[in-house]
Image (cartoon, rainbow, N blue to C red; front, top):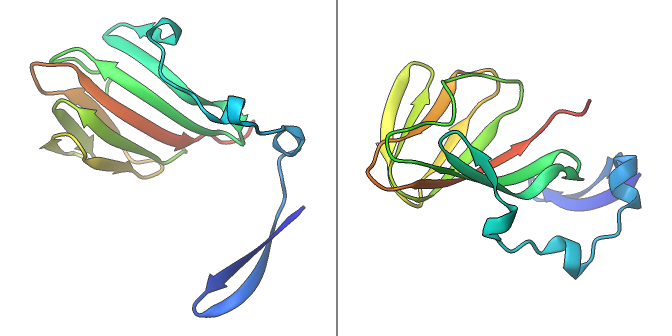
Length: 140
């Protein structure tokens, strides 16, 4: 069990958190805490590729992935799942679908997908769409 001290509403409070047994035994070093993109470690998809900076085994289900999607394609149809997630557009033009509505955004835009809400992202442009996916998977 870990104890954290933080400021809440102007007063100091102690918060306890149960650590995941796998994560509490993991030693974090500069070598495993830095992940520099490498094209030879990408995973090919039907419409581009993805690169996991942090997969769900790295730390308590928290993940960071880059998805790259070819022009006018999407990785999959709109869907929903228990986890909420963020997308952050790095390059290109994204069409974001959320709960029956769409919007088009460019680089440096964040998109939030609440838990159990239909959502999707597609490449609405003529160049590759590159975006980060930030998500915490539920424990098995």
